[in-house]
Amino acid sequence: MTDYTERNREHWNARTAVNAKRYDISGFKAGKITLTPIEREELGDVSGKSLLHFQCHFGLDTLSWARLGAQVTGVDFSEDAIALAERLTQETGLNARFLCSDIYELPKVLEDKFDIVFTSGGVLFWLSDLDRWAKIIAHFLKPGGIFYLQEEHPFLNVFDDAAHVTELLTRYPYFHTEEPVRIEGIIPHSDPAANQQGVEYVWSYSFSNILNALIAAGLRLDYLHEFPHGNNQRFPFMEKGEDGWWRWKNADNHIPLTFSLQATKV
Image (tube, rainbow, N blue to C red; front, side, top):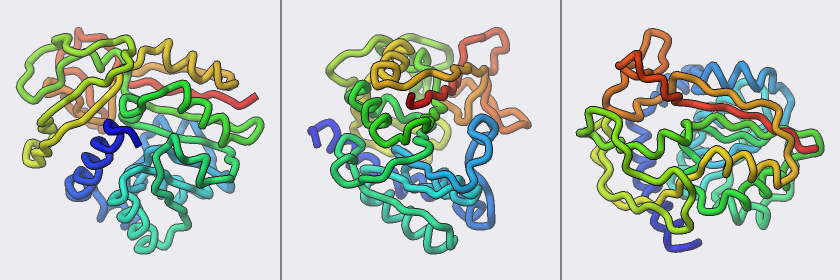
């Protein structure tokens, strides 16, 4: 691992304990599905399909796909997250496999091929090399297999999302740079009590970076969708609707919050 990756791994080990208290684990154990309506509708019936989940954290979404009938493998580089995922697997009795590995090292420890590679929700800016990531996706897909991604819109990453901001202010680069952005002392505005201090390193990627990486890896883009709502409070000046989605408080703000895409290995 690079120093940047190691620092991020330490951060996510620490975040596991924080998120275990924030997420509705008891509801999940009682039968809740944590996947978004977009993910479930667009991927459709996964019964009997093999699914590889990149950057799965402690596996609630992975186990949700298992609950829907998929044969799942979840991967994350955080030892603490994978340990919790394995405990949840035992406690729920769901059939799932979890591996602790950096995504870039995964071909060294996993030989299987999959019908679906899935990843979702604030994952891309933790990756140092998007072209290599896309090639690894293609490596693990069967011929005709699909890659699915639901993610925060890349344009959002230019804006300051600190807890004190009251309007959209540009702060970070949109276009990719080789050196990551160093972020210190983030306090999640959606849960200030968590107060997770530390250092994170993230990389910016434009839409063209994302799409061209997948195309260059031999994947055919099936669709790209953009949405005016998201599944978390990315900025303090957002509000949650009755449908569970977060939106801008200012209805005149038409900046998209989420996108999804599907690509097929040809």
